[in-house]
Image (cartoon, rainbow, N blue to C red; front, side, top):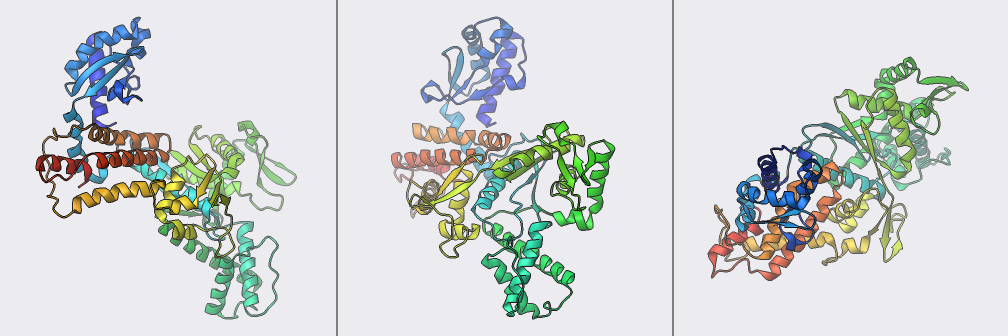
Length: 533
């Protein structure tokens, strides 16, 4: 909560205690901004929430509370009752303007809060197969995941950012076979390219690089040794490209967990999970396969854990993966998956519940599809390569700021059209440009020739213009906005806040003269409002 909201909430609680000898529960006292600013700066519905227990009308309760509140909240200019019993507060101008020193003192920490109370949260996102370049669908999930983990961290959660590398199974086998085919082709030799193999230019480039580095030594090598080598090289080189593209996109991870880790170096984790499921009576054999009784936990059908061939399904090591997350001490797991994983969410939750973990331990946010649109027409392919538009191409085309903003500004669970023309546009219609222009104006105010150096003051009583008050009210809400974005896993609310703040600043800039040499005192206080030190 902002300092002002916290003061009002505390005053409301104290007033209820004094007036009615009653201590309201913490979640009962709510302080909000009225939709109509004419009603006041802040409002509470505490009178309506107390009506049932006090057996009085909300307006009568409000009438009794107001004189007590005036004593407990000296920062209020006036307190009034409206409607069915809302209590509205108009704050003194100095109570808002004093926020300036708080923002200056906290710097980058302003807005941080402890609503997460140190809860250990592991967030898994992107987790694309290392079989090709990241594309625009991955870009949406990467931007959303990075923004989400930032607001969670800013709200006091202990967050780990994790990428689960899907580097086992059929797709990786096909990557190896595709590389070998291209490698043989480099030397003019025949090697069939699988029908469901990888035909992209990046695969061809990796094979050519291996041929140049290693020569033709793999043409007559042992088949299993050659396959394993190309599999490892493909994973390593594709993953290296992924990491570089994510770094360009300003997305970093704390942990990279490989699916192969559960097969090769830690297979006992998989066996431990299978043994535990068996001991709990959660599995059975049918048609030479091992099945999980997932229907007993809400799934529409039972799921295969081990095929009749002896090979594990993708689900089995992933259960071990999620158990491993919890064994590392994380009490909340958040996965960001593509919308096509809807049914997979159910089976993974079924598995964790069956193993004894509480419901809600794992929560999954599905990232919906995105259409890239240019000139009103969907664009599916890169003009340069003829393949899907990659994350790197998008960043080089519209810029990292625009790419990230456009993806984060829309709720992840909704389909979206990414307007590439708008993302490139240098006008106020582009929300990224609009926010950046507000920052540029602030920067220019500070660095304009003849502008005196700002110095902090104890109070900023000269800031009285309604547009100045509007900015201060918005700034006071920022800690609440951050906490709310974390609570609801909605970083798009930060984008909306930035747009509102930019809009308020542009209006203020066009209305009020910030740097007025004839009024140095007002100039200094307006510099305090305009420029973050």
